[in-house]
Image (cartoon, rainbow over all chains, first blue to last red; front, side, top):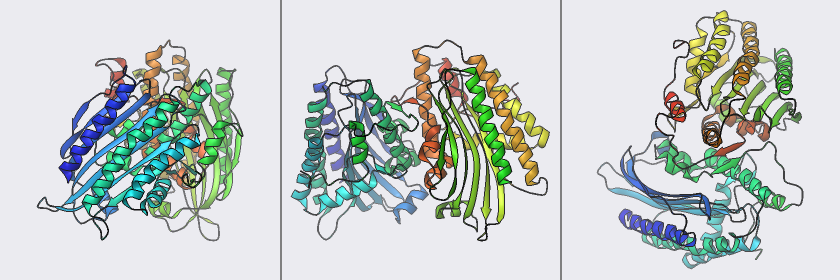
Length: 304
Length: 304
């Protein structure tokens, strides 16, 4: 399954980056190959900076193997300490403040016994949208598209994964959500209902839903006029993104602890960020609307 | 001791902020009083933004009391869960990239039994310098000044506190220091050698060393010409400061966990910050000199 999955995410990485390069043919993604120096394998980091669409963005894949650090073994509550991890992870920070930041990742994790045989494996992943200004129809469209592929597979999972996303991307120290949610799932392993291959089919559908969904929103909003105050708001909100990723995000902290490639892990951080003291948007402003919406998860399917 | 110490830091806060207001009379510090909503007490947050000297800076005092969260009790390995905490904390992010960022804090922590009597108390604190460009004489001067007040008290503590500072302000995921060090100390409690009052005298000397030391460096460098590339470097290095504070700094995480006032805790974050992908300064440049120095703690007294 490892090789199969890695071949899929390799193709997906190229599909996604070349699509964006077509839309903005003045910018292109870099192509950094790296090797995992604490074990075997490595990855390909593709980064774009100062593009017309993206002020910064990364679409990374990796396939690494090695020994789990002790505190991770405790956290996972597992008996074996050899692992393989395969994943695609993307974060795109658009230039235009009316286009939302998006994050998506899919991963396969394998635990191996001392003989090197896979004894447990599971898929994980997620997608979530972080707007700076609220366009309700965009958010509904986003959730709706992901609900379709969930429902095709199992009508119970959309609401389950949506709830997990809301609780995962919660900036608890601010008492607000990082964004308007999406899906989040982990430990998708063989069970009474679904085989690992079933989950793999779901994961592929999930991966392929990204481009048509995000492109629709991007193309609609990327030419919206904006001024300095919109940009200021975007930079302040990006600060919240940094706070979440560095204080709460398990994926980032796992990467830092397992000695992953630092520049690939922290590619998720936005390009230009501000922390103004006690910045509060004007009551009933567009900025204030965002803050209010982030205070409590919304059921974007129901309000349709 | 609590009241005595709080009176001292109240005066020190005003002394420090009014000195900077004298030098740049076009900017002034705000004065935000707040109350600790998870217990008793509160604090005064004094912030300056977009000043000629400081792009952002804060000099805060607080005096709070309440119940310790469970994970903090475990971390401290204490028997009692009632506490008082008094502290002054400052972080100054200068506008000119040739002036170093500085952080200083002093605090008194008291544990109380169920009757409300103080059963244990200790001082803690620290000071450290984070330059963007290296002026060796400034760093030596800084360390030298703090060594003097340490030696006056006990000739053993400078090297002990200096080492603690180097190991505390270590950005382990980057394998580099946050800055060029200073002093760091904690659990300064009554022992065979020193009473709590002795430590209080030391703490006051320590607190009073800040202004003459930092002013000397600030006044010397604040009018140095700089260009966009110096400013870019400053903003990129500020990113490392954010990474340290949000990933590693126990003080920040303690504040976030005990439900402290979020804007006062995160006032330490710099104003404008950048994360460029895989930014590497040119070999043998001034920027590269900084990076090399941060790879390993330097004994700034010896190289004098």
